Length: 490
Image 1 (cartoon, rainbow, N blue to C red):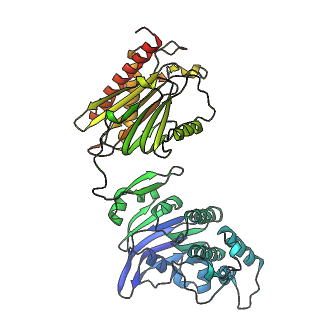
Image 2 (image 1 turned 120 degrees about the horizontal axis):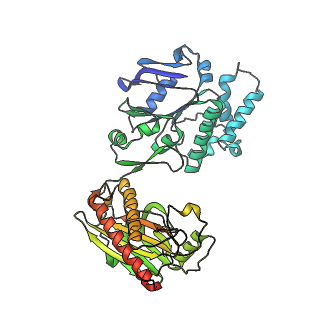
Image 3 (image 1 turned 30 degrees about the horizontal axis):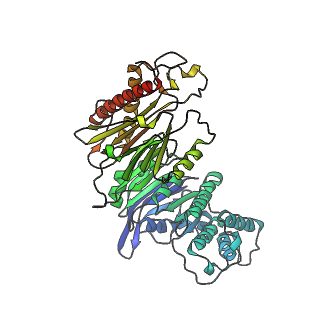
């Protein structure tokens, strides 16, 4: 559809773009990324013909762009430049109508049904119809940007060149605009080349990315092949981390600030725990990075307060999460900074212990209720059990864990818990086999993310050994406390 071959050019005697080559297929969206001064906008101007190339070629449908007349090229390629100069005051509709100029056969060409349809569709898709008769000068920068995008869409060219189309737009209109462009690409085969300032937006909406550096292509490919920490660090000179988008198989970046003196050394000890007959609470002066299966704020996040709340054995609520939120609020805990769990075990019987390692300390806290103990290998054959119980396990690490270490810590802690149940001969009351847990267990791994980086937490690693020892010992003691309270012989 569009082929760029060894394209070079710039301003005056300065070569800004140097021997750039790539192609774009029909229906594809290609995003151009790079730091300020890397040649992104200059490349787009060379492709569109706004700037003359000093060398190289651009072909559209196999034909050199220099061989198209101005109107022929405009019927093939629509351009949204970064800045717009307004010599005259036009209404919104008049501005969008200018996009139909390439389709007019003469100065006095009649306005056709296709012209009207294209203008109406373009205004509707960019949500500017209500401004139709207003002067464009009276609109905000973001509203003006949408008008010029509508003008480009009204042109109905098969190729669309955009220079930072989301500039001046709030996040709602960024989403709406890029959703529209993505839909046009999918449904109408629109081919799009767009300069982006926002790496995350480019990754999310583009099929491929071109990462520019000093006028040359540093990386080109799928978003997951371009948006990598090393590549972004090298080109942008900025520390970032990447993670997958929660709904799409696209990478997203998070900036990592380089700060000194902002964080004080944090160490969690047993003194940070507050124990009562109603709850076990751990409070930290700063947030801990946390991965958990809690009732409130499950998953990965940063939290300062951790609550293991005791509920009555007859607890039966349809909306557990909402009820938990109401409870936390009644206790004056911040909903955004608190992880909340529930247990039917007596919280004053919590087992808390600190374990020392060369890298730092690990704290383990366990409450154990066994009323709904299950053997995971046998649960397929049984109906839902309404009995209360729950083993809740907290592992707090004074150290810096990698994402892999967080997951391995979950596995190590789970295995240690299962071994404790085996040693204590806790049975699944239905299958009469050794239980591996209870049907409502919760597990939490939290780390201060300070000090030595701990990349692994498998059973034979230094961190894993402490987690295994701590969870096993505390779970055994918690089970024995439960049995003693229930009058079960040991």
